[in-house]
Length: 330
Image (tube, rainbow, N blue to C red; front, side):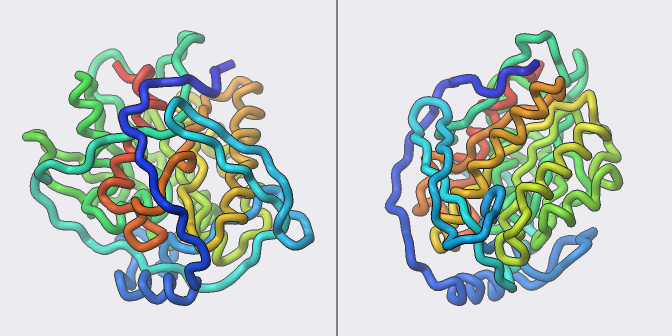
């Protein structure tokens, strides 16, 4: 069985003020003005990655009940989950646009706050001895990188190279991202399609998402479900995890909770509270799956439009992903 958590060095702790009471309609308008079409290959161009996250194991009620908190590595503190039935709605923020790029100068300092991962203590090694380790970024417009050219993938690529690891990204989408990072060609591929729900992501597994046989899969999913159909999102996530494990049994599946949505903190907490248990259940059964905490310590000041991260927020996400997978890279 793979260990689910591993405390790693926290590069930077950033604090922010939680923004509550932001009207959903205002946010949706902001997103819809940002972009209006999904990247090539989208199965559903309607809506973006915005919206409130779903309640985990939803039940009828007021939508407020106690839940489990998740804590990650040093520097982050858990947020109490709240259960109950999360409200459903319609409409999401806009989709990502095509990013042009060159080599970004400077960039936000990488940080990981509360990231959890694992180490190959069992001897499991997904990456090859020679050649790059193929990493599949899988999700919606947050994976696409709406709000910053290349999203978290830019800083993740930089962190791996700085530590002497060779990685590349896979996926059918090859838009949004610079052409060069620190003097090296940047692999722009990913499988982040704006507006997609958990079920729509699952519809791309195994084909076309896994066509390049990735060694590591990074999954951040569930944001759009909270606008379209919050109820049962955790059940749909469980089915997606089972599909990924079945179709990529030799890959490391890294599953994160979703980053904050200030206008719907209760439903985010409820949904997020279910994810570590889903991961633990499958890891206990022998699957190569670990949890990464993208929520804990993520300040709302690092959300560019109250849904998608800004440059600092994407760098924070990259740090959490990297802390989770670094011990598996060669």
